Length: 224
Image (cartoon, rainbow, N blue to C red):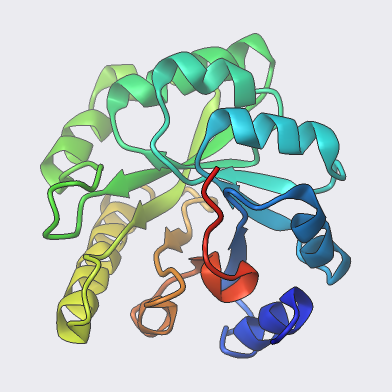
């Protein structure tokens, strides 16, 4: 059985230099995260606020914590002091809550807009029309303490690689439209977070700049 360090090295061999690896550490104990950390991994993704908070308190402070799961507005305050990137901004209401909490802490919090690209109804995210309606609003322009750094999406959980390719290509097209028409002068708008353990090679092929890898690094999930 390969070690966590060997698994990370193997994944990185498959990633171009411009693609960031987010090690998805949800449900994993601190000692396994430390093992990845000691191999040079610094970006970790969590999907539950409470779990991220205690891991932040327990683990080295140069770790960059990404919130990758669905985030409730009333829980933003707990991660606002330290979160490096909130990947799953799926409503304008949530973005405004992040801005408010970031303002209280004199921080600017980077965020990705999450788009619903899968055929599954269970996934969260904006439609393109919803996002455009938000982006052109005065209320959006008045936000000062959030930075829109790109887009995020999840493909359908399926063995149909053609469908996955189509969905990832759709997210890349959304990114390109937003970049050229609304964020052309925003250098930080550059991330396309797509691809997980089962489909990250397809995601990279379709333009991903950030992949979220859990089970390939840490093994199958541990459920509390």
